[in-house]
Length: 129
Figure 1 (cartoon, rainbow, N blue to C red):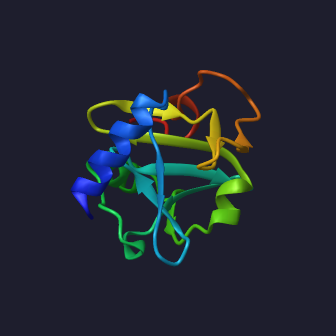
Figure 2 (cartoon, rainbow, N blue to C red):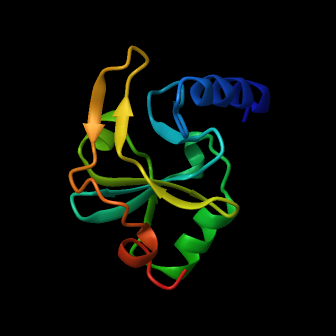
């Protein structure tokens, strides 16, 4: 990864009032946040981006993969992201955080959490962690 780019982008996102931001690789595949791995439920299937897309594996992400054979590690396209039932950012230090809204760089809403709840993946995504 390019830590300086991630840090600068994260600082700007925080200044603009966001908790996290989402990176795509050069092929347009979803990778990770600046400080957190990404987890999604797409059409009822639990997924996380594959490390083959260029992301860091992450401690919490690996714990999820080790704890449940139901979670798939795979390439996630941008259209997959937009069709997600749920999206979470999580890491070992900050825990899990459900994503409420995904905006583009112009501030347009691209995706909204259909449940609008504070539910965390601990009870809903990967029990036992």
